[in-house]
Length: 296
Image (cartoon, rainbow, N blue to C red; front, side):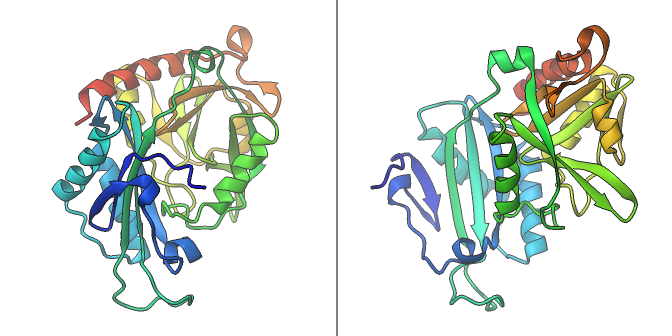
């Protein structure tokens, strides 16, 4: 039985109900996860930081050597039509391009026609209680592949990482990885960027082959400048995470949210131990202002 809604989606040049959309079982996205995706938050029908998201999508596809028309106005028209047909104004619109359809082989034939898909769903933000109390997270070793810079549809590692926290009734899994320089080093969450606060400064790992260049990295740099908060991208050790004054998560769906429990222990020190801190409060307020000024 098909339980998908009849909301509008876009697939390979056609707008149609989601529950009627079909792709070939020989699509390389289905067989290999051979594709890239992007999720863009929508506030009251308006796309937030659309150009940044489209640029990242283009970078991922270029690294996969998948050639597809990424004309800005074409994509805007597709997305806006899908968004306008959805019953809720606050959404998370999803873009996906796979390499296309071919007989199963690790070597992809040249000249395939990419499969292009757009859908949307209602966006689920942290609840007021989660904003007030913060989230609970657990840590795990980062066992995913080495190309975290590609926003690939091959997300099995992230799925397994998120299951670790779900099995412990926690909200997210924070990943740590050893490398030639030692470690463990913070990389990211199963579906979030992770930040720590030390002495009032926001610190995060710099994007590289293991850390996705999250759209919210540049956004938080801007918000830190606006709020007078020091900002630094550098290697963040496990000790930095566990001794942090604050730990924060950011993503398209979470915006920015405080982590107040980590592996069963309270985050922070003194009177703010186990509570969202002042850097989070300032950045959350600035984030809400950015939504109003940076959505199209």
